[in-house]
Image (cartoon, rainbow, N blue to C red):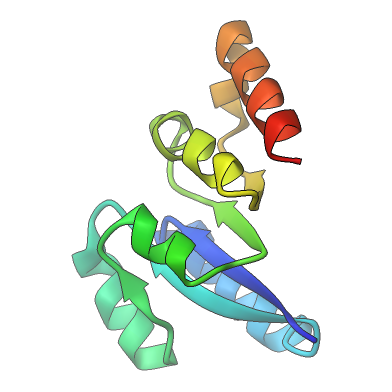
Length: 116
């Protein structure tokens, strides 16, 4: 069974990731959908490629991705990362600068451990 990936952020890196996933990993993964803080940027891309685009993180989480991959910003990791982990969903972040804040890093570790 394919794993479902949700995308947080649909800028240049997010689009490049989806294109690469489509070309190289489509046998193992499928796109659960895209959430971007500026959905107008994601809508056209999602429509063109057949990906659902969600207005809120909660809608993306309701699509039950196995993994959420973030290509948004440090602020997005801080705002949305804890909710992803609390939902029991794995989180892969590109904006690793969020973890330069030791308190946030520890919070995320605790949250991940508590959610399994």
